[in-house]
Every structure is written in structure tokens, then in C-alpha cells.
Length: 173
Image (tube, rainbow, N blue to C red; front, side, top):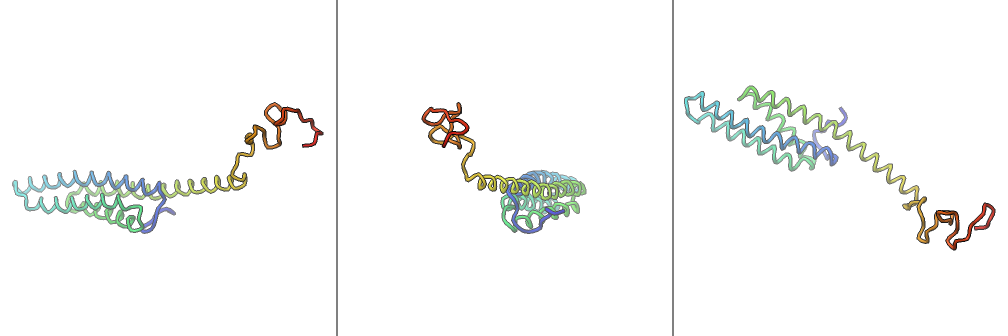
């Protein structure tokens, strides 16, 4: 897994994908926190003692996911994203279905890291090839007409020169 990064800078496509995953994860975490609080309140007979702690912790992790989505382009933002993934999995200690949510988002996170790196490398190679082609061509379109309407060999589209006089195969140019 070549693109699996725990700290460092990422390509533009990769960090955009990771930010999208973290944004969606923040929403899911927030709504899962509301469910966990309601379950805790129902189990305690209507009290909110246990549910309040879960609400604060869950909203804190959801907020951390939003912060990580905004900072994933920085070297330490990737590490923060990994921390969100770990905390989401740890949420399974409070609500068992959070393990499933954590595994799904961890799989999305790893897939975006690996595939995003492949796309970024392919884009970089394509841009390098384009730059090399431009440097070889001298930065101009060698096949197009020049400023006086003639091609690179001095002839116009009908085979005549800029002065309208035809040029034969043996004529001096």
C-alpha cells in the first residue's frame, strides 16, 4: 500500500477526497451521538446523566472530524484524520453499531489515501509529459500558420507563399 500515509503532505486530489470523507463522517458521528444519548436516557429511566457525557464526547469527536477535514492538506492534518478514525472505532465501546460505522469510514479513508495517491501520481506524470512536449516544441504550435498566414515552410494553405506566388519543389526559399 504505497499511498498509505500517516503524516505528511498529500496531492490535491487526495486531500479533497479525504476532506469529503471526514465531512460525511462528522455528520454521521453527530447523528449517532444523538441516538446514543437517547438510548442512554431511555435505559436510565428518563435521566440524562449518562447521556450527557456521551453527547459531549460524541459532539467533540464530530467537531474534531470537521477540524480534520479543514486541515487535511497540512502535514499534521493526516495524523488528525487518523485520530478521528481511531476515536470513531472507540465509539463502539458506548454504542456497538459504531464499530460498523468506524470500519466503514476507516475503509473509505484507506481507499481514498491509496487511490488518491495513484490519481495524483498519474496527474503529475501527465503534467510532466505535457511540460516536456511544450519544451520540445519550443512553446509554439509548430504546425499552425505564422503571423503572416504562412506555415512553418513559408507556404500558405493553398501552397503559395505569403506573396501569393507558387513555389515549386526546386524553387529557392
